[in-house]
Image 1 (cartoon, rainbow, N blue to C red):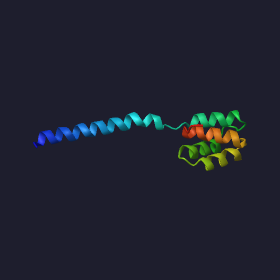
Image 2 (tube, one colour):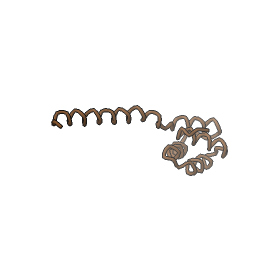
Image 3 (cartoon, rainbow, N blue to C red):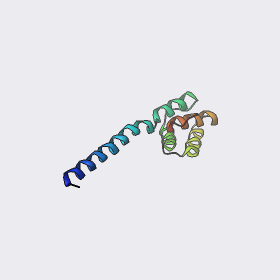
Image 4 (cartoon, helix red, strand yellow):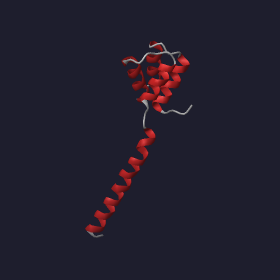
Length: 91
C-alpha cells in the first residue's frame, strides 16, 4: 500500500472520529442554570450552595446534588427533579 493512500485513509478516519465526537457532544451537555431555576422555584434562594449542588448533579453525583439542594431549603422531590435537569437524565 502506498504511503499517500495510508495517509489519506488515516486522515479520513480521524476526521470521521472527531466529527462524531463533535456531533455527540451537545447531547451530553449539562444544564446548571435549569437546575438552579428549578431550585429557586421550589423555594431556594440563588446562592453559591445551589450552584455547587447543581454542579454535583452535572458530574453524576445525584445524591450529593439532592443533599445540597435540600440543605438550601428545596423539598426532596423538587431537588431530585432539579438534579436530574442538571444531568439531563430522563424522568
